[in-house]
Image (cartoon, rainbow, N blue to C red; front, side, top):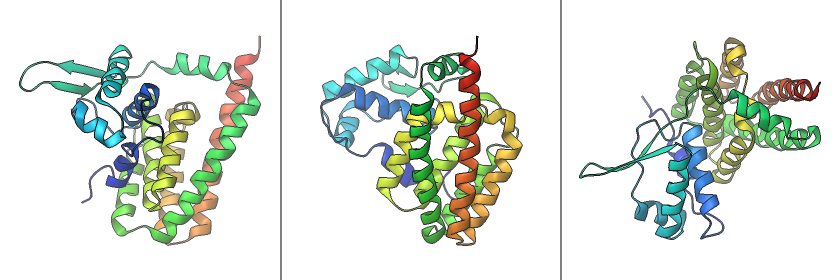
Length: 245
């Protein structure tokens, strides 16, 4: 049985940054890893020196990024022989802040980011159907089952995890990094209401997984695009509703 999260998905998260010395870039990468579930609750992070080497930045930059994560309540530092920095996964209760973030976006910006994500996710599904292994498909099946009975933030993380595994199954590090970036930018908003449609989402994930397993690239792309378009439409409706008096 494969690991719950593919190595390529985690590797993409810790790939060297394009620009070194940027605390914000390291912070965002780690926030994405935690909110996407690539780093589990209570998991110990690598040492500052190891993180600096993986990201290609200085240890001072990593230290400042970890401080920012502690301030956000996403990392806890423990002292002693068994100490270190440990992940504190976010709990439910972020829906209100996400709605405020959505209110501040323009519909044009929302559609633009949505179109970008649609192109990346559709291409990833097509390539996954052409390149995935039996182990990749099994991970997709496990990720699909994560939606069983999921609600709130748990359902949103399950949705985001599924699409990240599709990108990983495409065997393209660049596509996987694009998926991570777009999930960080839009994912929490796009899948805000997954819990209300969990069974439908699970059925759609299963259909996408079946298409990938059958090596039907065009069907995998089409089903993925339809799935994401429906989520974008729901988000646009929510956005317009928030702007009403």
